[in-house]
Image 1: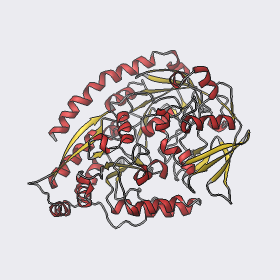
Image 2 (image 1 turned 135 degrees about the horizontal axis):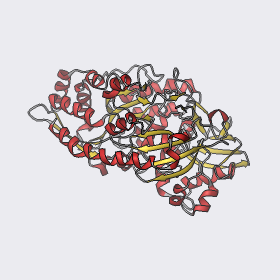
Image 3 (image 1 turned 180 degrees about the horizontal axis):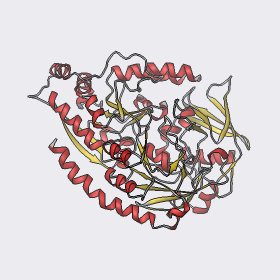
Length: 538
């Protein structure tokens, strides 16, 4: 407890003044004036994500540095709040798998233009794939390639059939390809040639997305305008302008909303929900496939390489107390997949609150209150999907202490944690890293446990190696039918949960707070959200 109180004094409080300055600084720009009916969103990252079609900052970075400006071949249907999101056509209007060669996919490209007026076509697609995959291409950039590695790792070859048709071949039959492509974005080759390199490109980016770049200022904000020529006329933004402001401190985000400096805050701290409701603000939330957990280090020498210690940690957590602390904006995580998911299956191990069973497992492993297990965990101050990480980890720290697990924390900025995730546990010198995991599609979450994706080739941070899991994920990957693939993923969920492959805590519901002058927002059951539907009233 004392450790976390000290962290909050040192880390959280100094963030308030800079964040407040950030709000004032961005709103001084002409494009943010209320007369323009700008939609102003405060996010929990410390800075605007990279704007070079390979955003950093995790999935929050993708949400605000990817989808507003850029499009993917395959995208998510974000129109409904009452059903799971499904993949739909994006820059590809259709696709098919070669019946004679299940490794070969053919994509028909839609008619679209980049913001600079240049055409979206097969040549633009190949140019972009070369920027990720071909180290000899002038447009290749190691940082961008690393950020998209898990999205492109299965691609073995690609080529042009005609101006509006391309093929992509995978190394093996891969039913996950569509989900892998759902956040692989496409930038304008013409704008890159004009800029000369990716750094200059990111200062004036051009994609095919629903918003067009206006300006940005490091640490302060990003200004965008609606794209009136967007190819999907149903998604031409209702608000003329969109302002995105990084405000990592939760209290400062709330203060900015209350004062009218922003209209919507992402990653809402749950303890302020009652007062915001009473003040007339609109609170939205929805179940979505996202699990707040610790990713564990399975390397020899880490305590979590012992399944007894992993299970003991899971049995020591009072998840109901954490949900109560979160004002009910989450559900206890008793498996990797959320309750009611098509992936649920029937795991045998249930990580319920049972401290006596936890103590028994620790005693069997040679530990206890008189000889505690000592673990080091990397956590963040804020970040996409991190909810209220400092306070939540304080509760977990105390629960684990009571059974004989002594936790020390290393606090990092969330963006630097994403870089640590790619480097792996051995470089991080930690026993766990608290980065939440989206479960909406396998390419962004559970594939991180594949033994062949250990760093630097992938994001298997903890060097997990379980033949049963690898077999289960291969079986799911071999399915091209959506329903059959979801059934196969149930086995994946069973294997990971039974092996206590993470410290599972909660599934959150993504609470947001909106000014009452906003109309038309639909919170989808998805990590991503569509802000083009929002109208800004007086």
